Amino acid sequence: MNFFRHRHTASPGLPALAALIAIAGCSSADDSASAAVPSPDTKVTELCRNLDKALPRTVDGRRRQDPQPRSALTAGWGSPAIILRCGVERPPKMTDPKVATGDDPKAIGGGANGVDWLMEQQDDGTTRLTTASRLAYVQVAVPRGADVSGVLVDLAPSVKKAIPKGIAD
Image 1 (cartoon, rainbow, N blue to C red):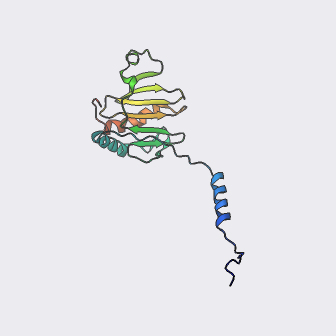
Image 2: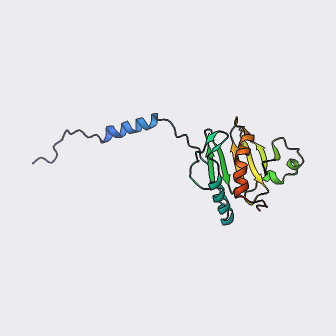
């Protein structure tokens, strides 16, 4: 008996693996956005979960498409995505006296539909909005070209409903 006899059998394993790798390399990239998930205390987390349930299906005409990793503390709409993060830390600019007096060209305060926001222009062209005078900080990143006022108008009712007025810290 010859134990070392070479058998010519067709093994689809290696060619199939090579084909799978080639197909995966040529397929379109995943369009889902990503967002760092905040880690607030229990009270703020509960407020953020309430906000997640109250958020609209569309913002600025963009359909809800949540970022990765999935969390009740983050939400997204469209591509490029408008990203909401609830339970973030207070932005340093909220206590910067230059912002309060209007002397910071990259950050201004304002309100929309009963919700106060800090608006910061980022170096990459995005606008970062953070709620003020609420028991949890909600931050929204609006990509260049999106209508910031439309985003504020669309999100304000949900924020008013889920995040009570107060001081988060």
